[in-house]
Length: 305
Image 1: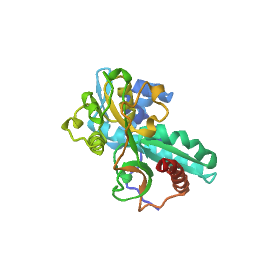
Image 2: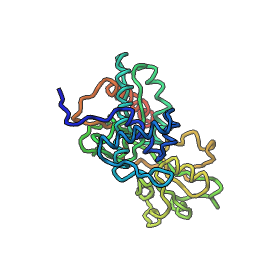
Image 3: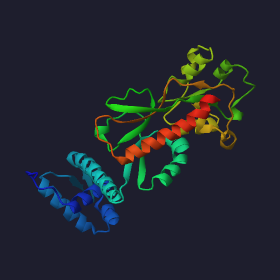
Image 4: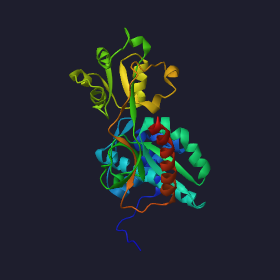
């Protein structure tokens, strides 16, 4: 039996505080929780008394979080979100299934994974995949994620990695951007190059693969997401370099063209990664098996082309 040296605040007080801290308003918290403003105020006063810490400063007609209140609000919010996920997961265990918390790259998820996920849902109706965005490596210990789809090298500390497939990249732009025919690779250097912040050397590598070395390959504005790159290219802001499967069969629909008929294979690849040391349940095992099957089917025809 765990012996606690203090009494944990009741759930009602924590829920009221979380809502009030998010809005910095007792009035808005009360509306959200279908309580009276005085009820929210009493819950928070009780919480402050039990903690011995002021969470809000009363300034004229409004409340403002103290430094301690801001920190505690973030911690309570994470705890309540974790409790929500755990509750949903245990409910799902009643049918022998569960949830998988998966970190994804946003454009990869929207263009490749989500269009295929119905097949997984149909085959494994008792398991569902929750997706959240992460564009960089992170510590699994510090998040609720159980696995991630990562682009780059299999060098994520403390994880096991399954290779999914590599990536071809292709230049795209709006036809209105071009002032004449693009007959050689280096003709593209006459136009603004749009870069990915997560792959800052992509253009340089692409030009290198086609025998062009030029400092101008590093010039240009940068966008964090490939969806932003695609939108910027469609808006005529420059030439973007994007994964080919993001735009396959959609160039005309997006108002884009490939100004030069040449692709290049990127040095990195897509990987399914998960903590090595943790025990993994059926949701992860089932999704992993399905994902590797889908990746093999996708990469097979591409490698033969």
